[in-house]
Length: 241
Image 1 (cartoon, helix red, strand yellow):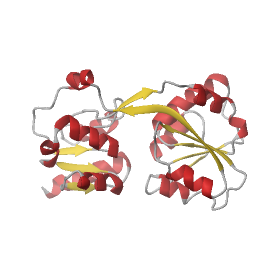
Image 2: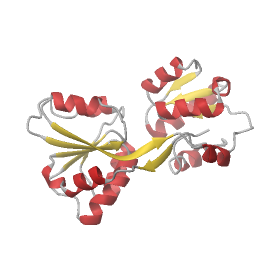
Image 3: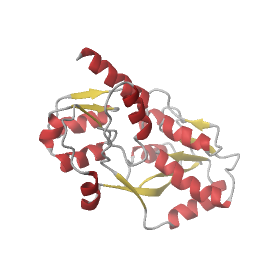
Image 4: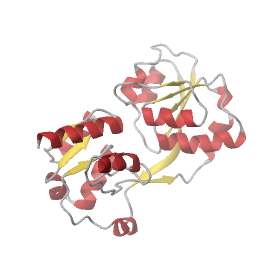
């Protein structure tokens, strides 16, 4: 069972099916537009005033670039950075070819390791979801940068109507793929702890595994990042089984 938001499961599902597995899509997060677009409009309208633009996710890329490219091309002097390959690929698809991004673990900690230890005078804009982690911005501020957080979208648990449309899966689930702590908490509420505890849980980050253990789950596999890492862990697990 793949639990990313709608539109983000298809590539992995196709690869699982090509290897003979059955991939069920059951989104545990819904991505919605934010109510107040003024901060996004303001930040994208003054991109030239920033030294670095950081995009936290592909959703942030798509929503921010929609505003940016509606009024101008990407400023040639503006550096871009992101925490993951999928976000870097999304930026490159919009013509932003030079992107600072980690190559091993995809999170704020590994992006920070690529950025200068001293950033005094730098103006940085962080395009992200509403209520994201504060570590990245706080650390950059501690290094001397001026940081503007710009929410581009919000994450929600599927509403009752969305859950009804999905329909609770009746078949036995052998494995859940969960790529965020928030999605894990939602899935627990949607399906119940017993349903998750009866299957293997594949997660691409130790932070999600910690959340899973805090929720009482024990059958957890921490994978390498991205679809490649998830698929590799899935195939290795079933080879052992």
